[in-house]
Amino acid sequence: MKTTAYLRVSTDKQDEASQRQIIGGKYEGVALEWVSDTASGGKPWHDRAIAGMLDRAERGDRIIVSEISRIARSTVGVLTFMQAAAEKGVTVDAVKSGITLDGSTASKIVITVLAMAAEIERDLLRERTKAALDARKGRGLPVGRQVGATGKRNKLDGRLNEIRPLLDAKVSKTAIARILKVSRQTLDTFLKTSYGEKVAKGEQLLIV
Image (cartoon, rainbow, N blue to C red; front, top):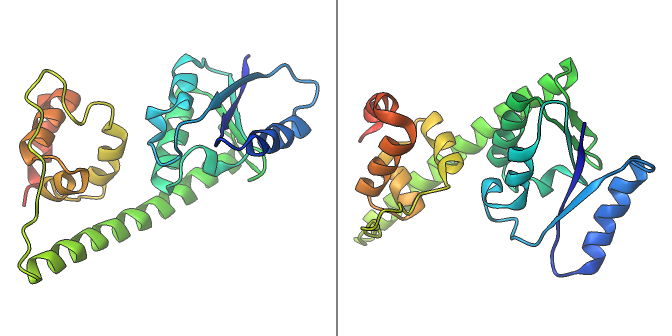
């Protein structure tokens, strides 16, 4: 079993030292592999080093963070990471937050609470998006969007974990495209490639 500690740090050395102290205080004497990541916390977790840690992890391994916010800034981001870890049988320990997800009944309760919070967050996102679009329309302003890339790579490559929660919350494809600042066609192409024809067809119900 491998135990890896993830440090999402700023340029402030004191920040990294603080995280090391928090983790080291609980895991004193344990052989830890430390991974430091200077990527912005605003980036989705799957675009940061912690995604590679999870990809390499095997069942029974453990990923440690000093606190839950080091995984992601949003509840949806934390939830999707926790779910991905649970599917692989990887334990996640947020030391300062006092949260350990190891398949126990207590950890399942935590996941349930996170899922409920994420649902509320998605509802608020939908409301804010609708309000913003209505406000722009009310002022007679156009609702702009970027034209999708014409090359082989799609602008949305690597952003599936941002899109999936929005689809789960039944946000329309048109609204999702506007949120992500891409064309509807770019989103449709990405979903067909990422989800496959069966899922893509199922999502047709979300079109408005």
